[in-house]
Length: 175
Length: 175
Image (cartoon, rainbow over all chains, first blue to last red; front, side, top):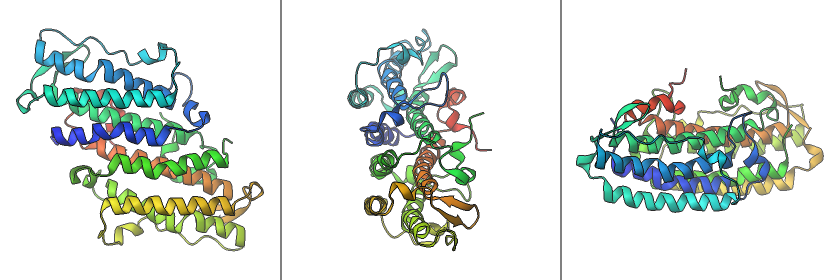
């Protein structure tokens, strides 16, 4: 195990700023491209991160502390953001992600003591999970969606790189 | 083809800031982890981006304009940064990347007119390549190395996420 709370927080507190610097002000062509039907564009990934910030990490940690294994987590709808009307700008969504993340890290620090990390709750599909695993997954979830955004953007230039496609693993079709 | 010069520049001008916000101030445990022997850690990826900024993109575009297909590009040593002594901090390397990128985008704007985009040079391994393909590859190279950094970091928590590993494609072993 490599987990440490302070190192997990280091990553979690950096993601919103890093993504804002990557995405804010980009042309719609970068923000609206995706990898084909039923795949997400960069904007939809940010909306998903916002939803996860509202419904996923802290509520699940609170359930572990309050209910243990007596109740399983409500399922997190990984597609909930797709039903919302996209009436705010990307910049507003990035700001919302930053604000929610700041609040949630404050809650995390107040909520979780070292002796809580091995406490368990029940995930509706995965079964018993530990507080430490929730927090580790929060970190990796940030990183996986950052990787997704840059992969989606890179795919726009698949034909434009010409023969260099051979050297650019990120352009390999997902299989 | 999706290439447009202004949209390519949008991405190129954002990468250094985005990576600085992701990496500056992180613990060495995040910066020094890698994916096993002969793989790069985040710091080495930044050093590689610095080397590419010095030797790769603008020099190759200049050769296309000056020599066309009469001379092939000098090979770019993709491992050159590994021989350099790591005597500067990551923050200094990130700053160097930002400065070189700012200079190079200035040069790009001065150097390349729309009528130059289809001009060709010769890559030592790939054969004839167009100016447009060099610039497109510059963009995708930024994105692929951003994806690499977050994948390397995510891998540190492979064991820590517990059963969530099933949902986190970024943790799949590279094969």
